[in-house]
Length: 157
Image (spheres, rainbow, N blue to C red):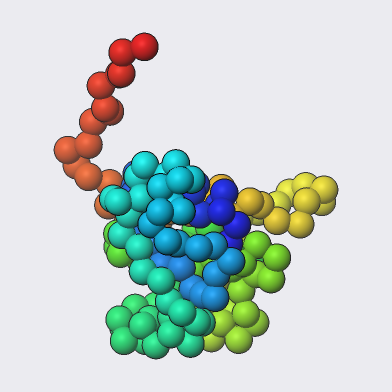
């Protein structure tokens, strides 16, 4: 995951009240001092779990008893037609270049979703943008937006 995507995805997760799990090895150094220098003022509010390897993530996932939704351009189900059920659904996104492992896509074939790409001019969407689209859709479909939410007051200029 590239640093810009880490910043954007972490901000989306904090804003929508979702935890972020990063599967290593990662190219990004999550050292607090470096994160602060990057200007991520929301970092202290992020519910972050780092998994050292794909195997560590799978062990955590298996122990949780949950079934993930995998986001891949090879998904059989369009992202807005999936049966998201709860605010704690797990959305799994692949690396920018490599995507998700084929073995994972085969294991959860019925839980692979895609965002349509009608244009043949691109091969994929930006990871951070995809996270925002899918997370908002999943929360909305699970009817998990806070009932008492209201817009924040405007800040003075």
